[in-house]
Length: 126
Image 1 (tube, one colour):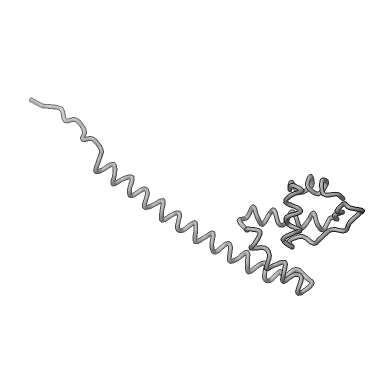
Image 2 (cartoon, helix red, strand yellow):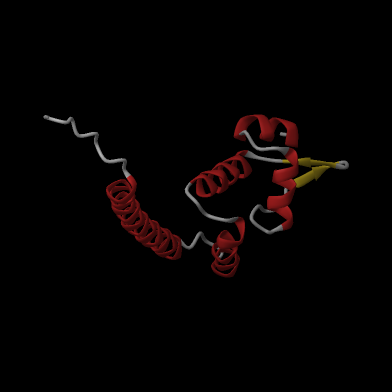
């Protein structure tokens, strides 16, 4: 299938698909004349790249996996699982840091209102 069809199937732009190829994230497709011709494996890989991006991975973070895949001639599942686990640890650390920041902001909110709130008007009882 041609790049336009792959783009439709994956929700990816042709420009991004060519970028994935240039970065080595996607094996070069065969050629039919001057046109690239993709197969279903390319579609699967592009969908995985997009899923990884949606999960917070940058394209450069995926490169070591693909280099290892080339070296072993098989997808490095164990390495992929390690990379995903490390990314999850980072996300959990980020969540903890954001919760701590939220608590500091709540404390600041309380303090600002205690210090600067206008005193309630006192009725004269005379």
